[in-house]
Image (tube, rainbow, N blue to C red; front, side):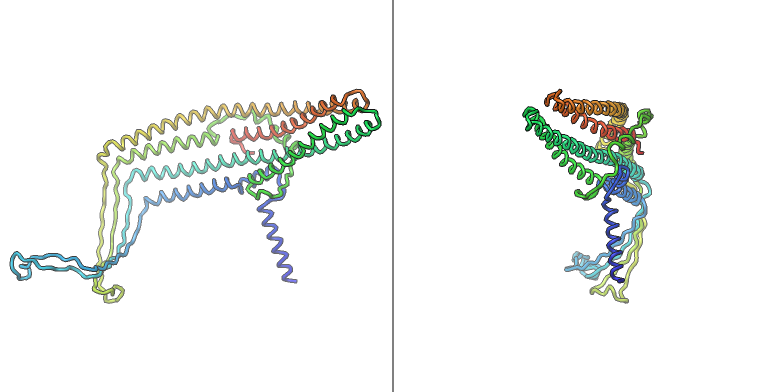
Amino acid sequence: MKNKLILLLGLFLSSLGYSQENPQSLNLQEAIDYALIHNRTAKKAGLDIEAAKQQKWETTATGLPQISASIDYNHWLKQQVSLIPSEFFGGNPGDFTEVAFGTSKTMNATVKVEQKLFDGSYLVGLQSAKVFLEISENAKEKTDLEIRKAVINAYGNVLLATESVNILNRNLSVLEKNLNETTKIYENGLEEEESVEQLKITLSGVKSSLNNTTRLKTLALQMLNITLGIDLKANTILTDNLESLTSKHMSLELIETDEDVEKTIDYKIASNDKVAKELLLKLEKSKALPTLNAFVNAGYSGNNEKFDFLKKDQKWFGSSLFGVSMNIPIFSSLGRSAATQRAQINLEKAKEDLTETEQKLKLQMASAKSDYQFSIEDYDNKKQNLSLAERIEQKNQTKFFEGIASSFELRQAQIQLYTSQQEYLQAMLDVVNKKAELETVLNIVE
């Protein structure tokens, strides 16, 4: 009994973990929240921020004390011979004696501590690391905005395909009923064969559209799954419907929103680029400044004819050294001057890019507001057109079965209705998508 309980608990926890990893049902906001965490592009953008943080510390650490140690073991296969005047040893003047200094084996252990005292490029590097982190954070914000818009578009496409399939199924059911009734009337000799054929043509077109839309629905759902960051073939259920989603996304107040360009992510990114170019210019200028470094070395060395360095009686001789080094750039054949001028040119280009980005953003905001307002107006228009098309089709259907209207007139009314249905669905989707586009441009996340 205990083992069964453990097994059931394990199955429950595993199914819970799976449901958290691959959600079964989502409304639009839940889909957006899920994608911002699990979308693969969002994950990579988050990792870029972590990498930038590590790079910032990596740059900072180069200006902190650096400690290194080394152990060297040397064994002379044949010792170097030096010639010493023989008269030092009581020999004849002009003669030389061959002498080998030292032992055949030596071992040295050294510890070195280095510290930057002044380096202009290091100071610029610290500023650059901070800016690089800001760039990564802005890139993540930009990625999140794009993912949010992509989820809204993908979610809406699934709803559009779903509504289209439902409408086509209803149309198909009505057409099949009309065809059956018309066929019976024709068989009784009260209707022409052309009427049956016209209905068959219309029915064939609706079936073809239904099959294609069904396939598109599957593809749209797979695209949504990819955007969410879950398995391609996961059976994700959407709890929102297109009509209610359209109603939620109608907000004329959004059109009156102030156009603060400097708050947009694209402006921030362009501004980051300008600051980065300023720092590169500082870096090139700093290369003309001297650098000052200090160091302390300490070590021990041992000598022996055998490898007895690990024995207690081995003698070790200590040494230590303190020093300060200064490197002064004097002449680089105008290389530094050319690099500085190139950095200045790139900075001027970044300033022009920032101004251009500002102008483009103002245009994008105005265009996005216009598109969004038009989508709302078009939605109202398409809604009225659909109502009229339904009434016209119903009247023609009544006239047709009463023998007043021809099958051709009925077909024309049906085609007009089907077109109005699709235009209405697309108008609803446009409202949702255009609002998402405007919010992305304005850097607004609701």
